[in-house]
Amino acid sequence: MGKFSGHLMNGHFWAFVRARLQPCRKKNHKKGASAPEAPFSFTSCVISRNYATTSSCHYSALVLLLAGAVLAGLGCSAQRDPQTVVMLIESSPLNLDPRIGTDAQSERISSLIFDSLLRRDPNSNIHPWLAVRWETTDPLRYIFHLRRDVRFHDGKPLTARDVRYTFQSLLSGEIKSLKASSYSLIASIETPDDFTVVFHLKEPRASFLWNLTQGAIGIVPEGAAGELARRPIGSGPFRFLSAAQDEHVLLERNLNYWSEPPRVQRVEFKVVPDATTRALELRKGAADIALNSLTADMVEVLGKEEQLKVLQEAGTSYQYLAFNLEDQKLTTTVRQAIAYGINLKPLVEDLWRNIVEPANSILPPQHWAYAADAPRYPYHPEKAMELLDQAGFVPGPDGVRLRLQMKTSTDQSGRELAAVLQEQLRKIGIALDIRSYEFATFYGDITRGSFELYSLRWTAGNDDPDIFEYCFYSQKVPPAGANRGHYRNSEVDRLIEAARTSTDLAARREAYVQIQHILNRDLPYIHLWYLNNVCVHNQRLRNIRLFPTGNYDFLTEIEVANPTNT
Picture 1 (cartoon, helix red, strand yellow):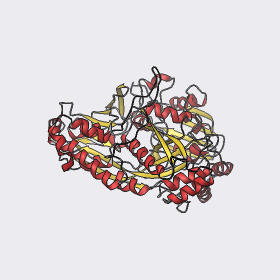
Picture 2 (cartoon, helix red, strand yellow):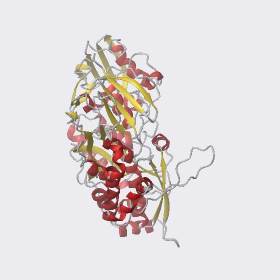
Picture 3 (spheres, helix red, strand yellow):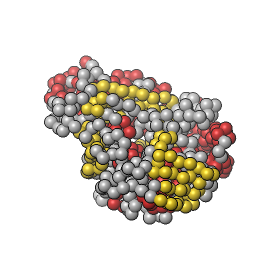
Picture 4 (cartoon, helix red, strand yellow):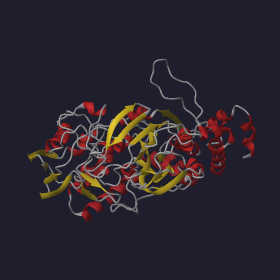
């Protein structure tokens, strides 16, 4: 760390470290325009051609930032309510109405406010929840019997009418939502009494029960329209107290919860977009917990702090690189060339320090439908350039064969991934122009199809093979689904239709295996990795049990040790 020591002695230390951890930007937008930040490349300390040197340099800067004597004054935490657990998140939830929000923060936080009919356990088994039991007289008819002791947070009882309204508000178009397509197979809903709900389906659907679990949808009060986005009223373990966009969401435990109430009084989700600031908040005791929102370097440094603990468990969250297939440049041959041009080894080992596992499917490897023998794309830059030649993209005078634009959010891990891809693809003649946006703008653009390349994570849902329909079925382009790249393949459509209506598990598996083989040839996505769940938390928290999907259900079980101490 000797090369950094001179900076410890002057007032420019903070600027020095930030320069190493942040992208270089220039103002480059017209007055009044809602424009992205300008293209950027990382400084040599964060991204260099020697990834081992990169990690060492980045790690050293973090040690200085988080543990250096210059910042020792930040180690004193401000006085705060010890009964409030502060969890750091990267961005605000876009909509806490469980019928509408599809981003990770919306689904995870709304699952704490609203109850679902059924519930998945950590092993993805389905159990009763609001419905104490259910039966099927035939593949098109499901009868659910509800609990009789459930009340919404405003004191009103939860009945079959609320269940019927939740789904009919989507089916009728009263509520406009991407989630509506998941329930379009419902033909009608009957409520013979206050605690019985009967669903009639248009066709058999193997994933129907899955789509009634937490994260997929929660039950809302009858008649609740758009106001739930502003002030959610559910029946879940936590009550909504307040929210401020890009600042926080505050929840309070529901003492009248029909199941076991949470053991902490309040949870505040504090929005901190910058990963370095999140690390500092944890170090100085201003926050209690961060889940999957810190870089690997930061996790390693924070793990050495006496008051902090690192918990790491296997996860199913899946990172991918997606293409807009309506862009004429992005042919199958070009997409395959890009796949061969990406070297995952330094990304996994140096950028992520082996807290991720390389992926070759949207499904996790332990899934019953996972195709272990699907085509793979090992790093082969010569093959990549050969494919680009075949596609007609030959080097120009500057060595550039093809120019593409990649959109990313302002989150540090996303920017670092984009910068490494920029460097790797440069070696095969692709100039990657990177545009960084605040998350809401970024997510809106990819939903509208306004992109060439982007990278995101599936943080839930990819443990159900129904995700193939949601992401790759030709009729599921937004707003009907998440086929944002406008992928179309008639054979994939046929296989999806066969798998979703079959009740034969072996036949379904065979169809999904074939789908994965085709997708790995067509490459609407390039598979990157599965992320382990990495939780950095204050030692005052106890009984933390993470779910493989990375959801926030564990917050209902955590405890605060010595809550009277700050």
